[in-house]
Figure 1 (cartoon, rainbow, N blue to C red):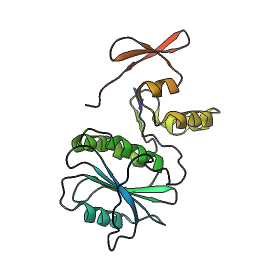
Figure 2: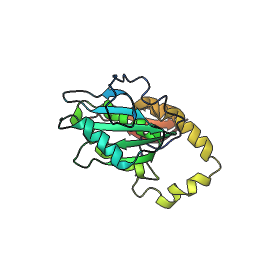
Figure 3: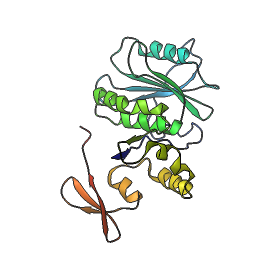
Figure 4: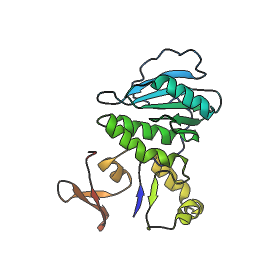
Length: 218
């Protein structure tokens, strides 16, 4: 099986669009923090996930990321993700732990999709499960792809990038990467034929080419 989820890497220019449409609550600048704080996004439920968004002029050091994260997190139950945007790249720290995971030189688009998916979960426990599944992929050169015997991993890393239709495929993917469910499948060009309450048959023209099973988040 070759699984591609909506956290795969893509190009995203600048940081102005980061979490566009999500309410960022204002937060006072904290003494000693080198970053410019943009606001705080909250997830759902009690002790909801917090995502603190900031900007900086250069790539932050990992110890600095962890220090700022610890200063905000304190001993509270709410999981916290710190995102620092800089020079069209992103750094991330969190969401839990004495020595929270920290990453730099990340694609802002991929980080944003991870954050949006976590914010959309029903409570902090579901958000943590989402982050547990998606965060390990941020440092992978095949972020968002789990290849299980469908294609050679080497081919995914190198071969597909030299295909004549690679740029076309990238541009097509960028148009649908934020979609899900029926909207994602139709955006990829499938005709969708309902089969039962959770299953649809996917067609290209007169050919049946696959099946889609829709699962609830829980």
